[in-house]
Image (tube, rainbow, N blue to C red; front, side, top):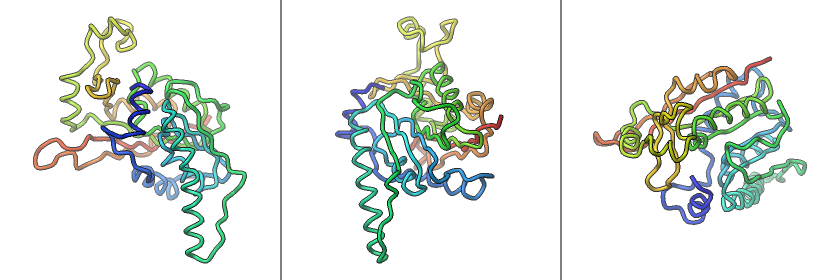
Length: 267
C-alpha cells in the first residue's frame, strides 16, 4: 500500500476503523507474558519497537505503563504526527487518573519515545540485540515474500535473547473473504512479468496473495505452517491464538487473524 493511501486514511478514514485505544489482542499478549515469561518481557528502562505504529495507540501506552523507551516506524507522515500527539494524550490521562485518586502523577522524564518514517522492509535503526519487545501487527502481510523474510531476520537481529515478538496477521484457514479475494484479485503471471518481486526466482506468482481492489496494495494471507517456516529458526513459538466470529448468519463477516507469541531463541 502506498504512502498516499495511508496519509489519506489516517486523515479521513474510509476503509479502516482508526481506534486510539490499545489493541485487545495486544493486551492479552501482555497479560500472558506477565504470567508465563521466564524473565520480565517488559523490563523497566527497556526498549519496544512498533513496526507500522500508525497513530501510536499501542506503543505509547505500553511505554508509559512499563517505563520503557520506544521507537515507532511508519510510512505515513500523518500517522506519525498523530502518534507524537498521542504522547500528550496519554500523559494527560495519567495525570487525570492520579488526580482522581488524590495522587500526584509520576511520569519518568527520562522516558524516550521516537517516531521514524520508514517502510516495514527497511532496516531498523538500532543495534543488534538491543530491543526487548517488537510489535508487528497487521503490517508484514503487505510485503512480498522476500521482504517478509528480510523483516523476520531483521526483527531477530535487534531482539535480545529472551526478547519477545508479538505478531498479528491475516489467517487463511476458514476465511471465505480471503479466498474470494485470492480468486478474484490474485497475483498473475502478467503481474510478475511487470514486477518480478511478486513471484519467485522462476517467475511463479506468489500464492495466497492478491492486490486489494480498494487500496491497490498487496496483501498476503498466511497459514499456520507459514508462521513456523518464517520464524521458526529464530523464535520459540509459544502460542498461536486464532480469531473467531468470522461468520455471521451463515455468511462471511470479519476477516480471520492469528496472533502469535514468540520468544527469541537464546544463543
